[in-house]
Amino acid sequence: MSALETVSDYISDVRTLLQDTIAPNRYDDASLLVALNVTLLETRRVRADLFVFQHHDKVPAFTAVNTVEVRFEQPFRLALVYGTAAHALARDQEDVQDARSASFMRIFYDMLLGVRVTGIGAPQQQGAA
Image 1: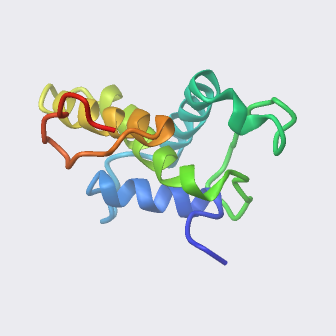
Image 2: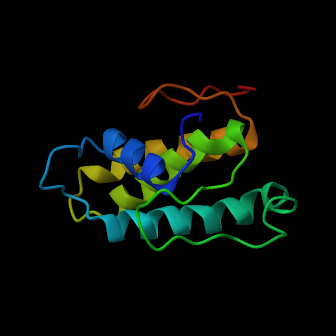
């Protein structure tokens, strides 16, 4: 089994990005599931082609952190992690999270669209391909 196969795998990796791995967690499972589901909706908006064959053009939704498989093409799985983390940070009430959320969201879009990904916080170069 490869990485990022199940809902639990995704939420665990998102928690790592959010630096939220020690109980009690700052982000509860329900809020991270909402973030994952919203990220899938946004992914469908931006890259509808990723949903045609595996999902028959429908967007999956998850209701529990469990071992249910998240069927998604491997090259784009990490994008879902960054998009989910970005959404969770955007919902946070602290202003300091806005910059991290924007960085994660930029990486999410770059990965989905095939743009060269720059480091977190690094400025995007003009003409980057």
